[in-house]
Length: 128
Image (cartoon, rainbow, N blue to C red; front, side):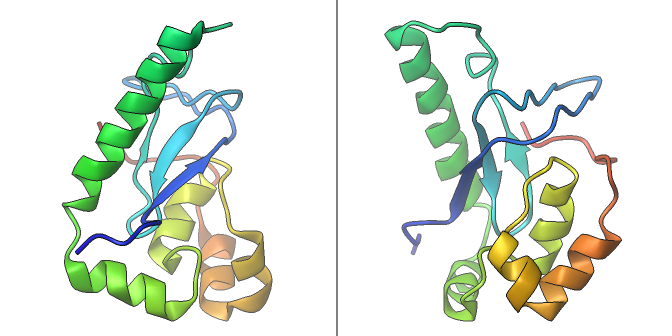
């Protein structure tokens, strides 16, 4: 069972990493359960034509579908039933990329605490 909104689409701050650069001007696919992020090389093309935009979206969507299968059905259902935009663990990881749920920051003490304790830069390798 896969729910309709398990992925996150957002832009974030520029994060330098030896294997991956997340550029804030371009789309990012992210997981609201574990906080993994993905941005393809097609996402970072300056002035892309329609073909490049299609390929970028295709790669993000393929990553989302593949990544969603890494989580158990009960994790998807639990997130949906919680009413949260993302889990506290995901919020903490996504905050390093400049992505955070404003509503959860104000309304959810657990997510708010996770965001307060989040590192300001990512220390983990991005998900490929």
